[in-house]
Image 1 (cartoon, rainbow, N blue to C red):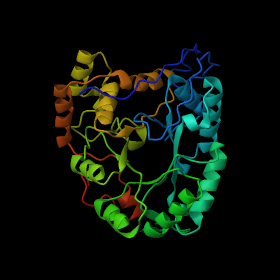
Image 2: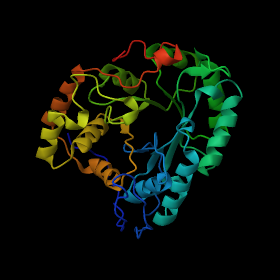
Image 3: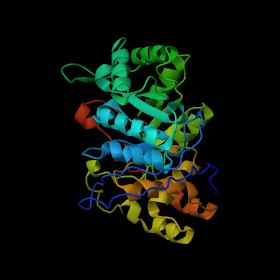
Image 4: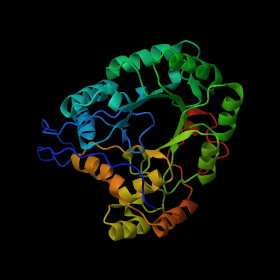
Length: 334
């Protein structure tokens, strides 16, 4: 397999040393100016902002844009959209890019479902991000949360409201996240407005190939969150007996053969399936490393080896028990 994604130019810049071995303060860039390239489809490689926190969130987002990322994934629930918005503005300034050169996604949280609340939610998100429109606005979950924090499965009235946001030009596309097959089929049956994209957990340990095929058949794009599996500390420790993905001997052997890193192999594998991937980091070196996945070329045998890891079928993110609702019915890893 050879990726057909065009490699975006890397910005040349001088940076301060890593601070305290963790987050990095990013210095002003001497990045070259890129020409305009209005985006009509979602870029395969995106920069995730979940769990970005601390004093260099804005700098990390800015550096991602300077490094070549053109797809930034946000959400109201992440609690950092103001900082992300500052980073977007700084990245645009330092690269000479325009707003339309970026694909920016955000998500509607569960406490703003219904017929009117989505309008309030997107207005707040746009204000926090410093934007006038989103390229993609997802329903984060098919779950409505009441003022008393009671959760119920609900999505059809909310989806109808989101179509109005699209018609107003506030979101160029609207999508869903974390839906089950029955819920997506129900949505398709009751709305003439098909989701542009579906964001879900996907990685070599949770491949969901049949579910991906369903989306391809219906012309729905797929974005893979947690494309590096349980590398995010929010998920806690790996289950006993499951090797951390980035230490997996299969990925390490492929990486050694192809001159890539294990993370780049996992991301290249994900993009090779036609899914966009949204790794995140606040570390300059890892941001650049993940962007380098666009140059990681996998052969057919490599892909087959990674495909073989799919027997695990392990899902890291499932709040069903905490929320007291049934999620992901009929899918792997439940």
